Amino acid sequence: MSFLELKQNLKLAQQLVMTPQLQQAIKLLQLSRLELVDTIQHEIEQNPLLEEEIPGSPTDSEPGQDIEAPAESGIPLVTEKTSEVTLGENPSTMTEIDWSDYANEYESGGAYKPRESAGEDQPSRFDILTQTPDLHSHLSWQLNLSKVTDEERKVGFYILGNLDHNGFLKVSEEEIVEESGCDPQMAKDMIALIQDMDPSGVGARNVKESLLLQLKRLGLENSLPARIVQDHLHFLETKNYGAISKATRQPINDVLTAVKIIVGLDPHPGRVYSDESPQYILPDVFIQKVDDEYVIMLNDEGLPRLKISSYYKEILKAKRGQQDATKDYIQEKLKSAAWLIKSIHQRQRTIYKVVESILKFQFDFFEKGVAHLKPLVLRDVAEDIEMHESTISRVTTNKYVHTPQGIFELKYFFTSSIERKDGGDSLSSESIKERIRHIIQVEHPDKPMSDKALSEVFQKEGIQLARRTVAKYREQLGILSSKFRKRPNLN
Image (cartoon, rainbow, N blue to C red):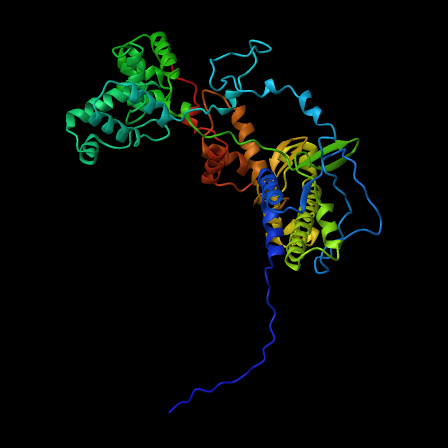
């Protein structure tokens, strides 16, 4: 028979505790520049003790009147006073504002009276409210204007909901009939109706059908370009114009004219209405060469400069007239604001250290270009600046640097190594890619080099590079294979 026994034991152990402040510092470290700006603005809205410092605004500082952050934070705060903004003692100053600039053109209870503008080209205030329609909304607008029954409109919207971003139909007629409950003829009619909409070629099942629809819209459904798309698209893909000429029994000049028409078509008609907004890159760091020395500058433009509100610090200094709950709230917000400012400063210092280390390791790149990029791993930089690899990984994610060689993500400088047969210095994968790009640029257009031939070139130079590795690097560079790079055969 066993008995349960209650005991007390002492155990000594080390444990990493992720405090909210540490979590915030780690989060800020891995944010991109745009995400950091959004986070700061959000904190300003949530924390009344945080204020954005306006450049050039006067600030008063009186020694001996600072209120420091909580002792556990260890952050002395800079004394800055804020002043209230008033309209002045004379309320008549309000009349100096021309309120007609802000008046609505439609006065309530009256007729429309257009206000004279400063010029014909002056944009309307409503221009900022417009939004580029996506493909679905553009086609829905056309469908609503079509003379169709309610049932046909229902089927039409089902078809529109099954178009991908290229404008291609991803369901069959049988699926349309089954899901919408219409008859087969109605499904065909609605597909034909949508294929007749703008943009030309939308509603097709594949690229070939889309090109044929576009040629039909141009009145070329029975032309040579339509025959080439219908029957000889595989020759067109390999630019074998001589084979097309023989198969169609047409002169080579007519084939080239037809190819020019086909090339002018859009194989993905739906992309013109893509709602994807462009992603702009703002460098976090600038590296410039001044005389014979490289200078690292952090890009602080657009980042709000934060300070602690002196108004709330004065409340904390007051000994009477405030409830304990109020002071506790302000104290907590003061601590949070101080940690945020410290975390942002720490983030900037860490980025500077990492870029400084990268500059030291990749000095030849900044001097001579991509071909001189050296192999580099996170551990090298981590050991150099005495930080953890995970910290380096966070710093180099979504951070960009402007250099004399162009704008690069910080992760770009960390590349794998390619060993030499003779035991010489290893080469980075990026420098190998640059070499492949250069070789292909100067190759003979009638005899482009295959991946195997490129591999043999590196083998002769003592660089062990397999054919499949060459193919992988070529695809990453966006370069076509040799059969697609070959000059068109016109015989």
